[in-house]
Amino acid sequence: MMIRKYRFHLFLILLILLMILLPNYMLNSDLKRVEASRKVANRFLSLIDAGHYQQVWKSCATYLQTHVPLQQWNLQLGAARQSAGKLIERLETRHSYTPAGKTGLPDGEYMVYAYLSKFTDKDKVREMVTLHKGSDETWRVAGYYIE
Image 1 (tube, one colour):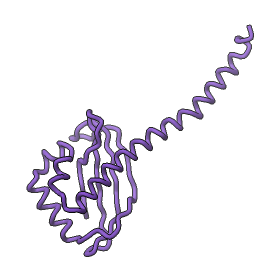
Image 2 (tube, helix red, strand yellow):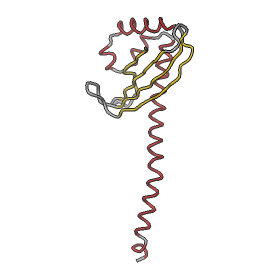
Image 3 (cartoon, rainbow, N blue to C red):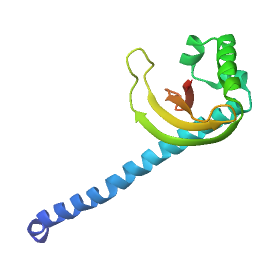
Image 4 (spheres, rainbow, N blue to C red):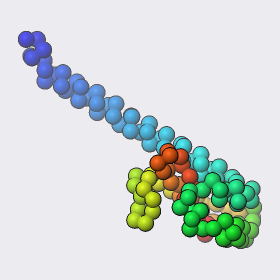
């Protein structure tokens, strides 16, 4: 009889607990996603900065490797980075998450990181790194854009 009397109160308490705990769980999940993908993006950029284009290409997503052959990757990336000079500073300006593939792209999760960089020969350079998390749960670079 006591339970029946306080059933509504018990329901409200459970609802309040859910409202408190669920956002923290979701935020923690988002932070882990950003942290894991940012680590991959930063490693990618460090290797690019060091001129290890072939090593980077081998670790990229299959989608990128299929659409940009290694020789083309080396030529285009080498030319773009050579004209910019050595990296002086790089600041992440934003990041965004897309939970599903867009038309024409493989299914999976996507993170896009945008940077504003300063090089010895170019003062303001925009860089964008797109990462894909496929069925193997591993973040891999699926695109790199340098302006």
